[in-house]
Length: 194
Ligand code: G3D
Image 1 (cartoon, rainbow, N blue to C red):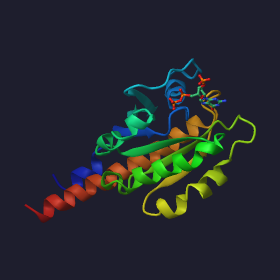
Image 2: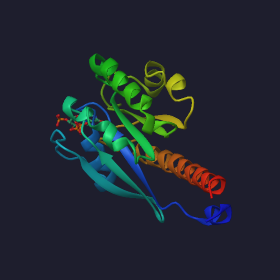
Image 3: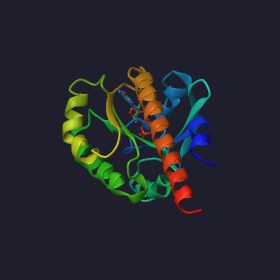
């Protein structure tokens, strides 16, 4: 193993943790990513997982861990192996925005989430009065809490699919970069400790 081999090794898969409060639209999104169609949803109990080929020879494995309060306590167990975070916000639910922001901050503070890239989906943009991406960026203090990582706030509608391909493209670029830097770091550590 050496820098040479890292340079040529190709990242083929990345683990994405999809989090957000219950009813934010995670199940709808996951289904839409896969089937490009809306469907009737049930509150997520336990977790859903799906693999999405976003580029030739590159797959995102998206883990939807569920957003109910009891599931939030186990979010951290899924953080260790994540290469990216997809955080879903119901932009139309102003009453729960503060709760969503608090959970988001808690996740980012986790040791396992250090420098992991983040894409926030400002979902339900079709609902009249929904907060736009700029407003979500401001209210979630993105610039402050994500200063040490790649981040992006993508407006979207899980029902129509608008904004989703952009989100996947951004996430793919971010996670590839993250994985490459992680691999390089591992190689340096190996070189330093023979
Ligand atoms: P969750 O998996 O995060 O808990 P769901 O959330 O995917 O179950 O979605 C919760 C509700 O929000 C569902 O409605 C779903 O259809 C709706 N929803 C999800 N995304 C959007 C969106 O972009 N726009 C609108 N208008 N609704 C959305 P029900 O009525 O089944 O509870």
